Image 1 (cartoon, rainbow, N blue to C red):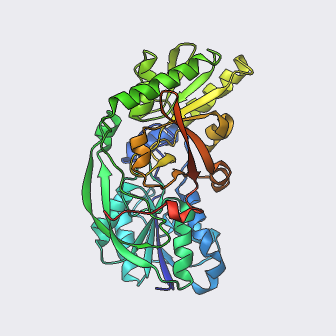
Image 2: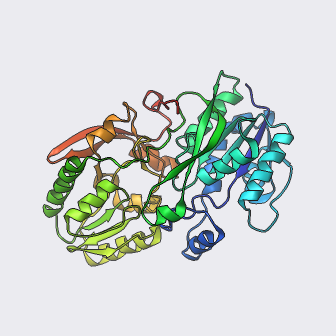
Image 3: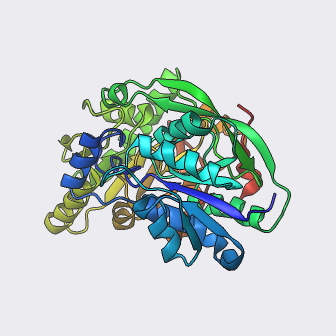
Amino acid sequence: MKLKKLGLVINPWAGIGGPAGLKGSDGADTVERALAAGISPQSHKRAAIALGALQPFADQLEIVTFAGDMGETTANELGFRVSVVGSAAGARSTPDDTEAAAQAIRAAGADLIVFVGGDGTARNMVNALGDSCPVLGIPAGVKMHSACFAISPRAGGEVLRRLMAGELVDLHTREVRDIDEKSFREGRVSTRYYGELLVPEEGHFLQAVKNAGREVEELAVADIAAQVQEEMQALDPETLYIFGPGSTTLAALNELGEHGTLLGVDLWKDGELIGVDVNTLQIQDAISSHRAADAGCPVKIILTAIGGQGHLIGRGNQQLSPPVLKAVGRDNLIVVATKTKITELGGRPLLIDSGEPELDEAWSGFIRVVTGYRDEILYPLSNGADAPEAQSTPNP
């Protein structure tokens, strides 16, 4: 297929709860809390990264969308010819507006609808379209378990570029799953199948369905925790540690005698927790205060990848925002993962999708991964645009 008329649906509030440490963005109250915490929406930026790949074809393409921040503003800023087929019912768009936009855009004859959001937005696409119209998800949410998303905005842009160039691109039905955010915020991970979407797939640029099951590898995790503790003891005790989400990182914190959060980000220094379930601004403040008080003492981030998908940065840990990552530096990452989790990737690399393509590209390459006690490997970390052989998506 060659694109002539591209639909665009942006969920302006997608992912805003991630940097705020709110584990998701569902609900008006969550958006208000994130805005009150000083967090800015990022979905327009991620949409622009993906659509930027189509700018050389701007004179051949029409963008069909809803008014304002649901698509019109971004498309206009990129210089596309834009047709507006509706608008949100209120000042702030809702899931109902997302579904209405998808239906109106399909009725206007779009060849493909690009939607920018997370699993909740994908559910809206299922409700509005089913598998009646091809869609492609640009990841902008917090958790994203569904297989209808590109692995990064840049990867999504590459799929769109190939479609616009008239290259042969396969269409496959892909699962849409979503998590119960209330349970997620309480530390329980439970996903549900909601349906399927028809998705273009080329060059292995789509993500896999997340493996939501917790690994029962107690000995391997305990060995990793022991290794992390040994490394921490070898450093200055005033080092600031940022523990990312996940059972493996939590095990390392438990090894220190602390009870942190399974799905949040915690701060540890001088032998104790100094922050529990913190947001990105609190992390930045902690780094600034640490460097002012303890000049020369490093800051370390301890994090693990999502099972099945391999995302190391940019899924479920948006509290580790680009300012945080830049302040800490790549050399101060301590990546932990069991060998089972690495093996299940089937040779695909770990993935980084921080929201800043330049940072993702700079941090790509081989990275040290602690896989046991005094046991580690070097494993590739990719920005999702340059290693197609390592990004294959298994059929759901």
